[in-house]
Image (cartoon, rainbow, N blue to C red; front, side, top):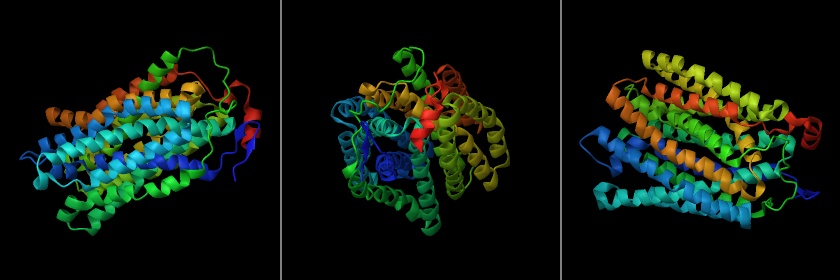
Length: 431
């Protein structure tokens, strides 16, 4: 049962699972579209040009990002006024409905222009619900967690994202292996989306007895940082999340990149994505936990620098060798290094924001960055490869983004309690 002490809640494993299942499903759905962009393009954007069909699919994928900031503002404001729990429930139901719609829309050959129009509507609804979900559940996790474990608990946000990609990669890999090529291309992605929608009733059941953290007076004590403008926090946070987003969607693009640019099998692309996601999960959770002991900043600054240095050598190897092993190993190593900053920075950004606007501010910063960079990343990469003829185009685009993120991380304030002489108190509360 839920225990309360001194105005705080005792965060239990089932509460973490209930909060993060929404995050997992949101990203499962979004990444499903990215992983199956080619197949969805064939179903809804038929064209004599494979390039134009893919671009139509990716443009619709990007449409879902337009409503993310709107959802973050509206549902985030609701979460900051009515509570984290009702906002998370509402966004979860909306996501389930949009997933069901997307999976059941007939193809272009069956209903014509109505098919891509309905797909765009489903994507816009998805984006709205995702924007509201991330701010609410991150605020809940940070407010309910003991100060000495915020980095560790917040890292499960990134962990569930990576787990979603891992599950998707396994499903994609299995469907491509089990079904004939034509059947997998036509219906495989629909099966994947329907499986995600089937999780919604279970998720609602899990969230039924979650505690509310909005009005906890001591949910997130102020750290002893120097006064800093929240406008500066927003700018730096947007730059960092933009960098993280581009890295994430370059990784998701591995399946399309393997097929279109490296002329390898979809199976190899799914295996590479699977390896990247599998190695990311323990890496980002470990870094989140470590940030509770030595501070957020040392982890995300030096971790991001390692990622930046690794990009060009690994992409050069993958595009030069063009073997299944190189693709899988290269994406796996990038998966480890790109995960170093996610756990610590998720906690750090949330800690830097006041509680009364935390859900809306975190969600808006996050969603704006993803709306600008996430929705365009795969589109830009496809275009860059097309006009340059170089398979190294994704690497250089990623280097530019991660370089900007590195500067923003160096300027971001330290927020971990351990960095301000609260180590003993934090560790005592975490035991």
